[in-house]
Amino acid sequence: MATASCTHSLTTRSYPSIHQLAPSMSHEHLKISNDLSSWVAKKRSRLPVLSMRQESAVLEVTSKSWNPSILKSETPVLVEFYTNWCEPCNMVHQLIDEIATDYAGRLERVAINVEEEPRVAEEYDIKAVPIVVLFKNGEKQESVVGTMPKDFFVAAIERVLAS
Image 1 (cartoon, rainbow, N blue to C red):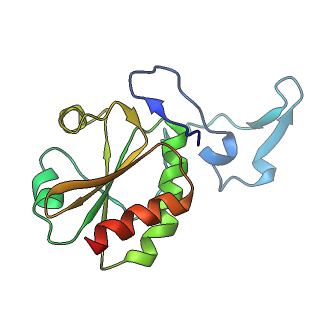
Image 2 (spheres, rainbow, N blue to C red):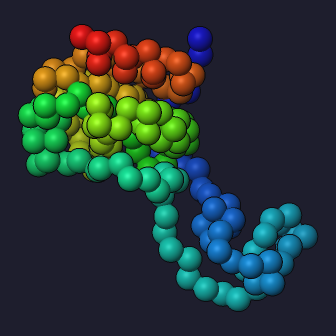
Image 3 (tube, rainbow, N blue to C red):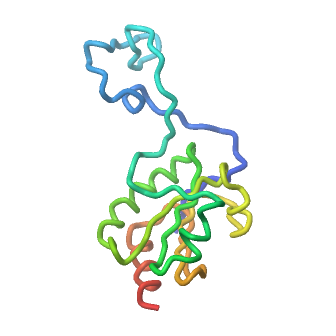
């Protein structure tokens, strides 16, 4: 089965549409530009710089919070390794959002940006993203690389919880 992943040494970036950047803008504030065939703002306003990553309740860890959050956790931990600009990472993030509610209380969930925390990525030999790694008792147990169907993630979680 083919999977999508990003190497974190790439410099190519995907950029969100105006609807993703400013979803609260009403249609009165937008007009269609025939030259560009896209929506553009009528007024010049500064749009916030946003990542491609959707907002969720996932805890972002750093190299400083890695040990207490993952290695010393009494609960199994699912770790999403990602970059902000990686669209497959965003797809996996949304899928894990769906799955996480089913495992509330039995599985902790955290995320780590490999560009901001390269030492952790290097320590766990993360060469491409997205990758989801499952830890139990401070040890790496399972990993799922790339964009995979929901069943792959669920099966890996179930194996870790059963061990």
